Amino acid sequence: MNSDINSNRNILITGASGLIGTRLIKNLLEKGHRVSVLSRQASNFKGVSTYNWEIDKQLIDLKAFEGIDTIIHLAGAGIADKRWTKQRKQEIVDSRIRSTQLLYHTIDAIKAPIKTFISASAVGYYGDRNDEILYEESASGTGFLADCCKQWEAAVDQGLKSGIRVVKLRIGIVLSKKGGALSELARPVSFFVGAPLGSGKQWMPWIHLTDLVSIFEKAIENSDYSGTFNACTPYPVTNYEFTKILAKKLFRPVWPVNVPEFVLKTMLGEMSTVILNSTRTSPQKLMDMGFRFRYQGLDAALSEIYSH
Image (cartoon, rainbow, N blue to C red; front, side, top):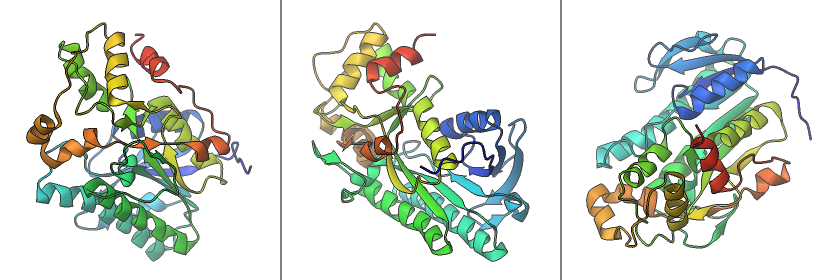
């Protein structure tokens, strides 16, 4: 494998203020990489240069690209931040597509020597697939999340025309002690109202933040990483198993009845697919690259998170 671990990169990150970006910046700086960020507002990252961009207006500070060889693209409106109105769904798609288009348009316009473009994607690409084991080559699914991810990845793949190495990480539920999806999943359990959602049989692909950041680092440093990767643990769990293990870690009971699917659809509308879709992903491609997960099992991952 072509692992250029000792070669420091000049990296530009979008969406840097989120859960993944914050941890990634810290790790990259510790490794000696130079890091800059694109943001709509000033950032508080030490040792990091911040440049402005306005995706809606398709404006960007050209200085952001000076000396940059690698882009990490994490920007995008939150999937579960607001109810999915027609307008909100368009915002979710546009925030991903138009930001990608702006980056590539600028790269081409100023002939920036970008060698690597690493983008977040999501397991939503596969849609609701019951018990089917899903590999990167598996067909895309149906529904809003799948359509959004397909458009997102197609926009990212435009970099291939310019000879850029493109890496797309289809990310599952990111588990971390600092916010993210876990705090939302843990809230009802903490208040003694934990119960499986829907049938409870739907598969939940997940990954510990430490492992996800490590995958990004590998993708940056090893030029053999190319194309799409399922960024999830080798051991996904069902919603019932997830709820049961989480409750055990929080010393809380699990109710013997499930939250009915119609209740979730009434509360969340179409956004209920985020928790009702069954996505049984396999990270075999990552493991074939030699990647080793530090937290393969949910019990170990949650033990680390809740040990403090």
